[in-house]
Length: 188
Ligand code: PRP
Ligand code: 7HP
Figure 1 (cartoon, rainbow, N blue to C red):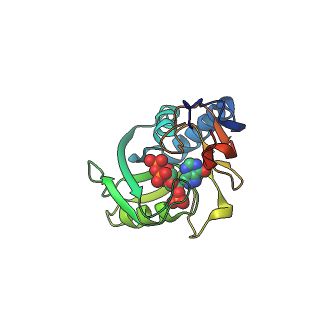
Figure 2 (figure 1 turned 60 degrees about the vertical axis):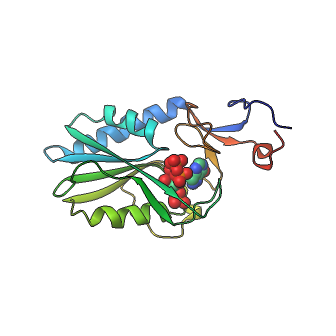
């Protein structure tokens, strides 16, 4: 029988603390500001996981930015595995032609989602397209992805928090943590 979800109690280990995330986001924001000064930067974030990262990162950037949001879902996979079959649930709301686009993701795992998105966005003729991810899990990569800005490189563990979910929950945790195995096996 399953009881109510206790978000923090379900986390076995904090992998990246709230303080470490905030410090790294500040550093990334500074680097991005330096790299894009005088350009036309559009941040494109991929819902829903990158929502907290996008919100913090855009405020750590001190050059003018436009923002846009896409939402995609991968189908045919499981709660912990993406399939590479990507469906666009929400498209860009404005043209990115001739814009310098920075795609903001929460995590790159197999790389299949970004592989699809990069091809899709390149087809819209941006002036440039770079990738920024909070977390990178290179051990699981199935396709090569050129990552320009990385927050943290992590081991092959399923993580939740700061936007990342399991079964749509845990996104509102302020840190990134590893779930207890019992949560996956349904033992509560
Ligand atoms: C997660 C994450 C990435 C993708 C990474 O999204 O936000 O977009 O998986 O996995 P991949 O590199 O193996 O393709 P998810 O489909 O879980 O949607 P969400 O952002 O709404 O949680
Ligand atoms: C997707 C995803 N979502 C949450 N936690 C992880 O470790 C993940 N990898 N890919």
